[in-house]
Image (cartoon, rainbow, N blue to C red; front, side):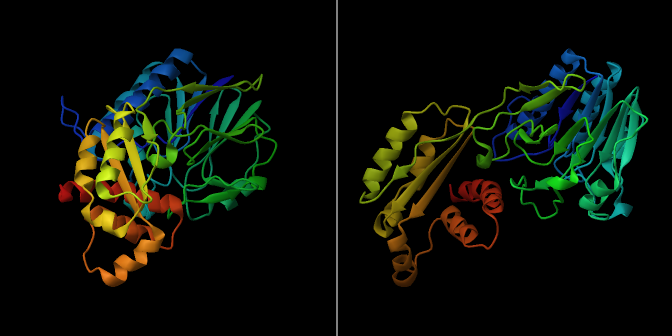
Length: 371
């Protein structure tokens, strides 16, 4: 019995302002679609007995028509190939109010496709396999749901399908406002496989329990993470990760501006950027320890233009700690919008991952206004 495990495809996600020239779609949105199509291509080529999608098929509760159409076409390919597919809703695609209804209902008419979106656990039986599908829910809490279910004695194979963060000696969370977590001790030993969704990096949580990870990178916090799908042979226990080819996100070598004038910073930035192939990549340059004087006269727009060949170029400028207080007390000039926004977010009382997400969403818009 072979299974393919996919998760966190986030169809409809978009970022930055670059538009795909052929059809006018946001380029990052298109990247996400192409990653999912690769995942389906690979899955059909593998011909597994069953596919499980562990949540966050869409990036939000009310996806746009383009995302819905794309999801339908890809799931229809699995249906036409006769591959049983079980999907659960994740925290990004679960309405806060049950009365709102779930977008997953549109998949109910597709043969071989089993969408699960209601709170609790729903069992999907295929031959000698039972999938215990537990979508995201706040009521009842997922920890309570998982603690109340156990493998079926009527099936040879039992798989737990769950969208949640896991808490234990290692923590697997995204620090999102509505995420649910389950203690690792609640994952009993009786499962033949536990297919987890929510955490974006492919990780082994414990024996037979894995996050497949997302199919695309969704920010600088995911630099270096390989993205793909997981193939599992339930009988032998063999676990194979199939990597997808996606757009690179890179951090350029950090630039320490201690003691440098603004003209010297610009020169160092030009050298750093030109030494790295950034074309069509998503790239970031961090310049730290910039003095107050250099900060005021620094041509940050000129540095951004140096990175214009990238799909998206993010510039982060950090003032020297010793100068920050001087700027705030003796200088009434408000800095560039993007830099002021970064300072504001940095001072917020929230996890670093949330701060990073806020900056990734807000900074590109402010930089565009700036230009």
